[in-house]
Image (cartoon, rainbow, N blue to C red):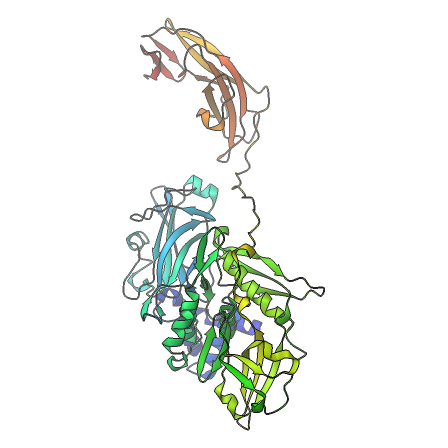
Length: 620
């Protein structure tokens, strides 16, 4: 199947050219149009091919890393909810040369919808400062040689920076606006430093969709609270990467408001701080199977999901007291206790991963939570929408404690079972097996042919959902890895250079000087660097003066801008291919005494005049 899809994708490449940068139709619709054109008209085959290609390319959300910048002829767009780092698909590239300067222009599609704002920029894995007015990068290795802009993806405004119209030779025209697509615009000048450092990855920390409705206020805007965010995604059409739920399949605002309030609760965490109970910070690739995407949301709020009475219900994990007692008188058959269940439901050791903003939004492990038990039963959770170390621990602890509640019961009921519903908390009115001492939540609710109901319940209790501050596990301290410096040439060999102090005399004038003499011993060296520093102790790296730069043929270098009767240190290093090597430190030496002022001495570097204060300047 994969080979067939790749073959079809190649045939569709022509009709797809320019599809993504248009931005006025969804990717799925554009792919369907291309397939329709290929097959000679609209058909179920064309639609099926479009669906198959997208599904083949997509993957469900995961905490695992994904490419920051990429380019390919057929690609899915992305949905951003909450705050996430994103780069995107390269949809435009243009090289330009003016005079002797070379420039490169890029546009990356970060999300297939309007976003709220940008909070910070990254070049490679370094946060950089950017001038909001000009777009110029003002910190890091690319300062002054890179420019960055962000377009939110508005639906009626052209956000293209003016220079992309004036400097790109009409390659990015008014027809390439990209309405409704959040974009990153980047410009680089290919200076020696930029070429040496290499072209960086470009990304940004972005606050995602600002079209999410809060059911409590009916206000549409930016939020990352789990329930409003989930139902916004659930309502998105399938072709835009959502679940495609109809309006009448969404619960009423009263129920959604109650669940939103649960997500909005402040939970105490270590450090006398608080955080919201459940939030989603998501980056979702469109085209992934909707049911798989849905389950990642449910897991990331320790929730439960069902379709009941024509409504999609996703309740976040929290304690709901029992609202009914099921009587044995209403049983329509024998109660059973299942023996074969999903081992994950009974796990006594749970682990997981989350997305860590403190580690550049990379996947990080959540501390393992476990119960003392002889027979270890493990479960692992990919918390794709979680960016809080503490929230991830709470979710794993809920899963662990649910696993410790091992009681499961199948309870067949007569017509009175129609009064119950999925996710309801109940008690069982029976003295058998001590079941009346526990609360249960209805996991499965099934209507039988005789209008009875069979329900499957699992044990539930209030302690599952509360994690005391003292039980959080602090993450282990990890060292930081410094940015590696380029491997440069070694220091000059001992004895290859000497460092002395001389009194240079000419035209009746005596001038103290520091003199380097020797020859380059590295055949790859392109330049020789000379530095000096006053003091009786060896200078630190930031105390050297210079460097003065000579070519590789130099055998003598004089420095005369010095003070009499003072100890000085000298240093020689080589440069190869723009990379400076280690220093050979020489000295110290003491400079000679008084200088005759008011005269001029001719040297190889020009006429040197000694001023009345003992300093010097070049006069010719």
